[in-house]
Image 1 (cartoon, rainbow, N blue to C red):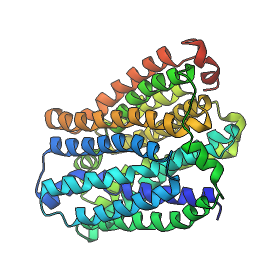
Image 2 (image 1 turned 30 degrees about the vertical axis):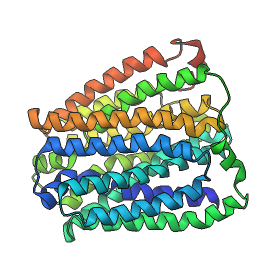
Image 3 (image 1 turned 180 degrees about the vertical axis):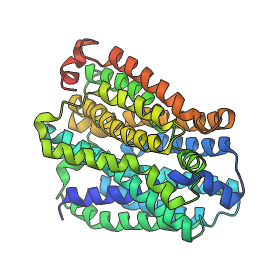
Image 4 (image 1 turned 90 degrees about the horizontal axis):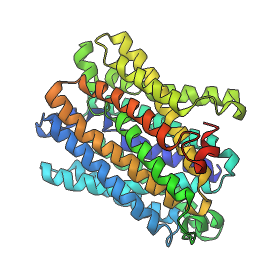
Length: 397
């Protein structure tokens, strides 16, 4: 297998491991610790997002001085060990400490994203970004189905054993790649990650922060409905089947796979058709449909919502890599990732409070308002005509 395919495989495994608990956080805390407080679940998800947000820029800095693949071997082994400690945690404070430590080391796998793009020609970035975006969705599908299956037949704690196995597998795949990298087989990409930029603050830097503001609001709106979706589905459908709940939760990922396949069939010439505003409007519609009390409308809304998230994330990421230089990919992406995780962090806190105060349907309503606000902010900061520095990029979106 080529380096790219192996790193894509590592990313799939990493996302599956990270996605195992995502659909079932409320169930986990209720079953393991007897805690049924939605606000506590929201605070935990927010804390894990903050941990990843804070850790990734640190790993991007470390990757300037230590080859990225070698670094991944160490960090994923450490993450696997902390998974085992989380599995054995006998109290809530110890669980928090061990699991947040686990997320600190897991965050390093995000280095694969700029690493791969630094080896690609810019005219191939849209395909690679689309592929990586689908991997996130595919990992979410597999993670949701696998966790639903585990929770149907085993204890919730066993999810951490599966996570540890994922981390160990990643380390084993990266080990021979790291040896090749050390011998210079992938030296060019390594140098692009390690070389600090000497360029002064430029228009591209301004775009990073403008784009970051838009992404913060986009990710807040997109992730607001995630923490309690499976509870919402079970309550409205009357089905107490966690495997089915996991499948419904994974619908956006299935739609993303279909969108990537259709995009590949159309070819690169059609890549500009799905505009950012169109994707955001679809996100608005999908959120409103999911707030419906009818199961069929919820399923339709879930599909539309998945298409919106895929197209929106790909187009916004493309803006960054079109304006950044390869030697700045890791640094610029780490900045954008802070904004993304800050949006997820805020959504986690808000989701718990909304469910506690207004019920399980409230996050969908607030998410729809968030998509409207994202459209307005995008048109103000990034839309053609908003600023000459970004007009050439956004014209194609």
